[in-house]
Image 1 (cartoon, one colour):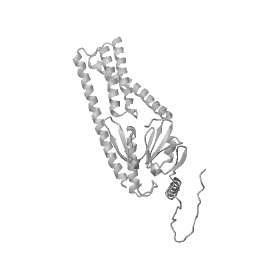
Image 2 (cartoon, each protein chain N blue to C red):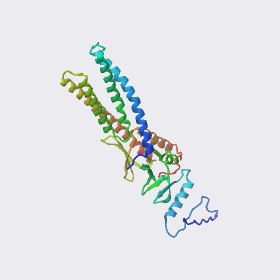
Image 3 (cartoon, one colour):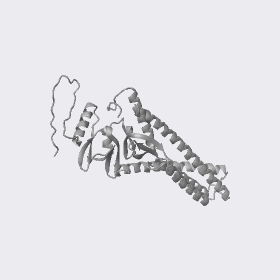
Image 4 (cartoon, rainbow over the protein chains, first blue to last red):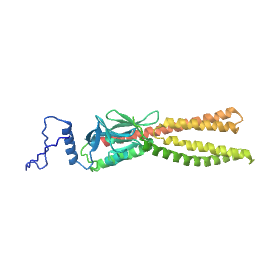
Length: 171
Length: 149
């Protein structure tokens, strides 16, 4: 059973913007989760994604998601360091994800545009996608137009200074 | 490795199937007209059994060529695989029909037609590949700009 976190609120006029201090004996996963939770509350309403690893529930910040893909009957979520399972359909997940940052590149995969290193068109004639973390996948040729449009949309959003992506400064 | 889930797979297969049916029908009709056109070109005027057979076979060729073009819509197939598959399909049918209907009196003429088609396919594939490379290159440039924001 999960331990209840003790929360102490100290009113001090000095802190116009709240300062959050976490006191802990060691930097555990729980502490990381608390930090993510706080960071996301202060940003926007893009929800954290509930994911599972060995039946252990974790909340993943959208900015950490590299891609989501279907593997057999399961929907997997990949971050920089790990792979998790999600108890949703890919479409259901798509609805929860930031639509500016994430997009469908094929029937069975959604990617985070900000985690992509580059695209390529190889001799075999498939559109390759290489991520910053080194993983490679492919995009459907019929969706390349959508990818281009999404990239442009991000540029436009960035130029106008709109914080549509809700993540504040560059990831 | 990513594999489509069963439901998504079924949905995609359905889309390709309907596309195939529509394209095949259209291809058959176009084939009929092309067959008619060639008959006219060769100034053939008999309208007997041979004429009907010729028309039907032309239609079938059109059906297979156009219906077969759905291979380009198969998500997981690269451009090369789709092009080669379509090429093999068309060349094979064409050869069977050409031999069966005795379209060529000299084999050299037939071979020339095969060479011409092969060159056309190669040129189209090359052109498509170059266009794609350009598109992807542009996309990478845009991606860089976007990420530097």
